[in-house]
Length: 383
Image (tube, rainbow, N blue to C red; front, side):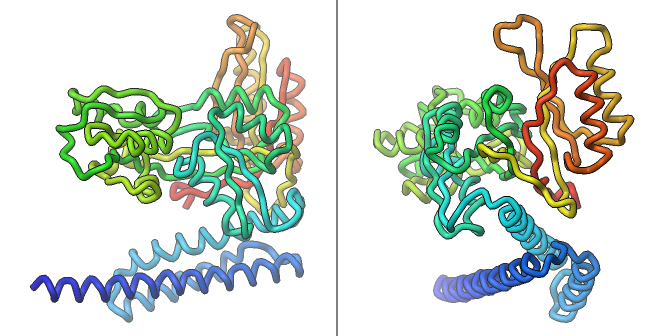
């Protein structure tokens, strides 16, 4: 029976490899399509063709005995990835921020950190070599960009469980850098140890404060373990590996376990299963976003202390039919009880109505700073 099961699993492994090889071949053709469109100034999306493709997929799924919904869902993800690649390629082509096929990206953490994974995901399909360089703090990662040691910095700015990441808001608001992109990464926290030990034996758990906050409900059920904040998820994993203590564990991703040869003793421990972190891509120079690309614009605004001043500013957005997707406040340095407001709006600064709205907003606010206009990352909720 066991031999038969092993044989079936071997066949599944072979099919999985074939699927991945086919997807890689498809992505190669997507790159050719993208290059053709750039040369001939063709639009990125052909919605009519996309719907025709999905119709064919639904029919083919029925023909081969596969669930139509499952097949459609799978191919919507494939189409999303294709559009994502073409979007980034168009922005790179029109702005020419990096010469050559190699880039340097700074991030907070070390190899295996979520920021490292996000940087690799964001750039690896467009550049043959991505040098991701880890720093101890968000500020140091930003300084590497400002000192031109790297081409981009990637910084986490919000999480669907733990909320805003204040250090990043302070950096993008106070430093002379521009947001030129975003990356939304699904975060699956796991508890890692050097051996596949029972969780009852764990006495010390290390991780980044954000990962600890995002896994608080699980940690409350491990009362005998002391939870300690550490520099980063991946550095926490590296630390328990170096210590070689079976009573220690770290909260990090499964990819980190693979990297350091650790064991996942509890999978998906975050308070919310749908746990996402949004990262912003920062550059020393802004980018222009083609009108055909859905864009997001990030702003930093300071209002007066007069009654209703914030509402007046927000009403400007309503007047110009500008959708605000995010509003966050941060205390201003050395100005007690004064706040900077961080806004994300859906729209392109080169759109006439958005431009008029921002001009009026500039008159209403005491200070208005455009942090960046960049392609909006599509998520499952956008479909």
